[in-house]
Length: 195
Image 1 (cartoon, rainbow, N blue to C red):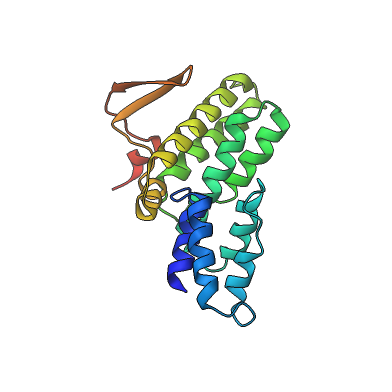
Image 2: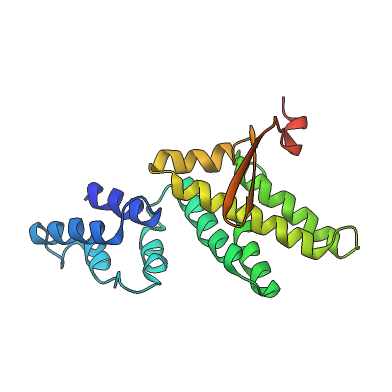
């Protein structure tokens, strides 16, 4: 049962395709009793052809996932929505869903990038920041998070992305879906207070 759970997590994190997962799932169904195995029963009842299958899968796995895996899934899920959205209210709604995952006492460097955007959003009201610029930077951050998330092929490395954050030695800007990388040494703003 642990193998099917691990494969379900890999599907949730875009490591394997839904077609590959379905093959593994239905092979498992041949050897297991669906009536007595609630977890397997729930997995079989998901329609993997629908766009919302990941939401259903996330709800099934939510109680069994490690916190870091669940947070990384949610960050990627809402970052995809933010980068493709043009409605400001929807962008803020999705951003708030990401920011709700932020905890000060956790050492998740990636979440500090979202915290910094949140601070800038707060400055819009007093006209210290321009909303358009903050939204552009938020979309760039989300685009980069999704890009990094999609190129990683192991669960441990996706969690590492959450813990260590985006590469600090590179400044990546996305222009017309082409990546230009400039080597520079960056230090996150909050690291000045770390010992």
